[in-house]
Image (cartoon, rainbow, N blue to C red):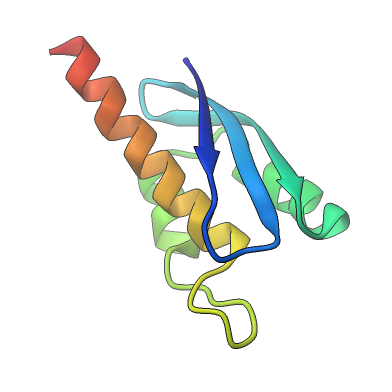
Length: 88
């Protein structure tokens, strides 16, 4: 399933990714720091929702209360919970 998430409190505006069962692939960020976010997309490709949450959920960007990576952790959890509702 392709999923789109509107970010909050970051330079990136949106994150799109595929979620298949619990595996995240094809992550694309819109806006933000292109090099860093391209690297982050490669790092998380093929990881589970839990792995992404564990690595990135509490990361802050400067004085901001969140970061693009923390927003990704929120997004994958939200997508996973929505996917579970559709399966049940």
